Amino acid sequence: MKTLKYSRQRESIKACLMRRKDHPTADALYTSIREQFPNISLGTVYRNLNLLVDLGEIRKFSCGDGTDHFDYDTSPHYHFVCRRCGRITDIPMEAASGLEEKAAVHVEGTIEDHTIFFYGVCADCQQEGKRSAGGGRIKGGAESFDPENFQISS
Amino acid sequence: MKTLKYSRQRESIKACLMRRKDHPTADALYTSIREQFPNISLGTVYRNLNLLVDLGEIRKFSCGDGTDHFDYDTSPHYHFVCRRCGRITDIPMEAASGLEEKAAVHVEGTIEDHTIFFYGVCADCQQEGKRSAGGGRIKGGAESFDPENFQISS
DNA sequence: TTTAAAATTAATAACGATTATTATTTATAT
DNA sequence: ATATAAATAATAATCGTTATTAATTTTAAA
Image 1: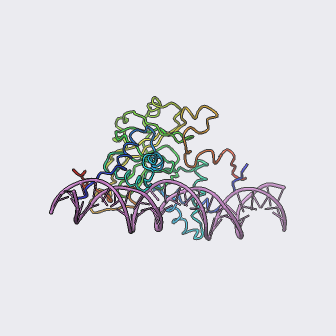
Image 2: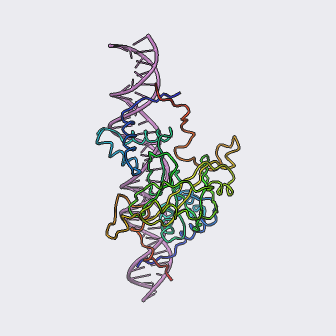
Image 3: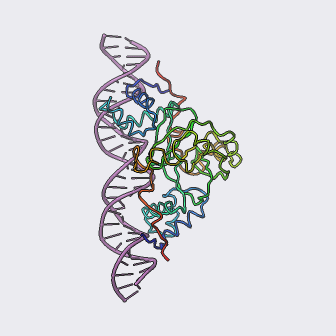
């Protein structure tokens, strides 16, 4: 039996994640927390986040941008991801009724839960000129490659 | 204007992905293709897969196990992920009607598409004893940590 | 209130997945 | 045939994450 001991770093990580409405990465959280704990180690942030996930106190998810995001809200809800700026927002809609049941028809085995990510362009990014509203772009995104400019040679 | 030139490596990558019903990672594909092209480079596999994604010929997705997977089927469908063995199977059900419309109510901006991942335990893994049916386990999975054995100290 | 055991930490090394670089090879238009 | 541009193999570099370790901190018990 492993006994969990108090640590002010862990409390700070929880508190910091709780008061943010975005869905920060471990590194973003690390940057925030260093204001309060200038000596905290990135490894400590990762270790505690994973511990909190395992304890069921927070959630971890990956939306396709190559890094994991963390969410203090463990209640069931979905996410919207902006393809331009990468911003992730909550979609507090209730689970489509019978979704898992409908899926189960095609699955041999047991379905425990599911996630939905909606992708598109957020309002801020839709205003022309605003090329980035938050931070990183989605991996393999548009800016780097324009399929319109490709042509299969004769 | 960039002109796409034929390459037997790229054709092989497409053909190999097409005939597989799983959803291989770049590395798994690399292993398969080396039977035919023993000198192919892992970088070539990655570069061509990303090119094919940008051209819209294949799909790339991340289901939370830390590595990207590729899918030759670009038609809309969902996926089931086994938490024990990591196997990913198609769920050919049609998009829940009105799902994006329902989500749009909570989003300022435009929803273009969505993905759904169902998680659970596949039939093979449910048979006790069979601890692994395919390959890697899901990241941060159960085996490594048992929350039941944790206790907040007094 | 010391003491001791175990958990946590900071620092850093190691790791796996992916991308970038570069010199060489290959495909294609002329 | 030749020139040009794209694709390649090899390899280095990068990024996100996990593992290791010696030192520190928490906690229970003496």
